Amino acid sequence: MPFNIRQLRYAIAAADHGSFYRAARALDVEQSTLSRAILKLEHSIGMSIFERSRSGVTTTLAGSTFIRSAKPMVDTADKLVKMMRAAGQGRAGGLMIGHNSSVSAGNLRATILNWIETHPDVDVECVESDRSLLLAGLNTGEIDIAILMGVAGQNGFRCEPVWSERMLVALPESHPLANQDVVHWTDLREERFLLPITDPGPAIRDMLLGRLALSGSKPDIRVLRSSRETVLSMLGVSSGVSIVCEGSTGALYPDVVYRPIHGEQGPALTGFSAYWCEDNINPTIHRFLGFIKSRYALTFDFSTKIQ
Image 1 (cartoon, rainbow, N blue to C red):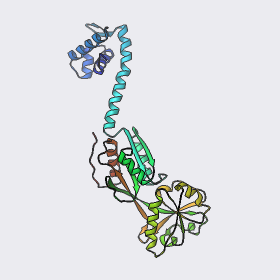
Image 2: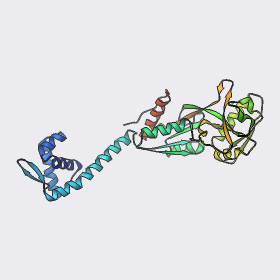
Image 3: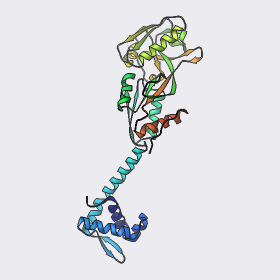
Image 4: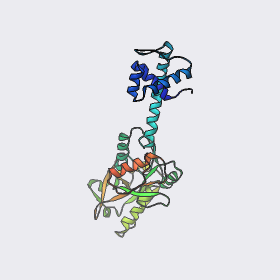
């Protein structure tokens, strides 16, 4: 292209103000600088854009057409620069969030919704899968951050606890325990637990083995080759119960109710952790980490790459 955006901007300002002097004042440049740039632009396109007089400048017939065409070009360039600056600062671009639990309720859902509300120019996509696949996605860069149940570290990734959620028992509406406002672990010793083979079923199974073993009972756990949604959808007509995180309670299933579980110390809680690669160059991940840190008053440090 024989001209640049700066020259177009000068010409548009001169046309709008009807004067090189007033245009230069508005753009905070020397009049001679603006005049030379416009003259160079006219030489480049091979025609006069302005008719010059002692009272100012007016556009030629061809110049008026040229200015009308130049304005959208400058607007597009300005939007592009603004967009790229926002992306470099993590205020635009994309963010891929992996998770292995439901987001029908709970902290993860609230966090994502609040982030979207305050960062409308960031394209957020959520990926729900098993822990191993999400960690593999972090390793390849396909996923920016994974929020997973548990607080166990993973070699090669940064891991920080972010929040805790209540554990609840999902019961058939006809179950005797459905009449209680709170269910204790000791109330569940004789129950048959139905869990999905997919995440977070295995983590909940391990938790049940640890919790109920303390009471001297061996829990009856059936791991089904079904999704979390399928297990809960069929639970209302079964003789079993299931355990879910608070994030699952936003979804309602036929003839199924949720009751919070309590132990000796009060409500049963499970922790969630954020996993990410510290060499991730996406500026948005660092802004999102700062968002989580502020929202939940966390104290972990991370290397900032916001421009």
